[in-house]
Image: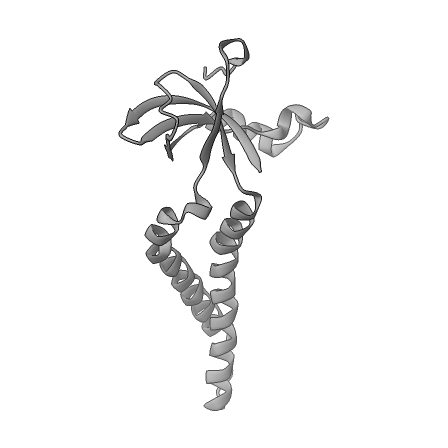
Length: 158
């Protein structure tokens, strides 16, 4: 299970809005001074993420909690968000090749690009339409595992 510290910023009924800070692994790398990722991180800055999670234990605003997400949820989500559009893109490119083969026409670079981009757009459209189903799926939602005591609350959002 993946774990992350968060601070509860708002509660409503059985849910809590928690804020996490995105982290980069640039602090552990030896080449961080010459890396483009480090430069990009400095430009973009530290981003905060708000999540709505189930608050079964009725934690209060200001509590530092540990969120958990199943490992397979991350893998499934990544495959869905990255793999599905690529699958559609390659599928449409192959479909285009088949169509041009049936009509005995040359499959030009322009046609390949158009079919591929159409497939990519169809993949993204499919994901956006499935997004509400994914948001309601409990397998993809983070949960509050535990509250950290006041001595362990060393989370800084500067």
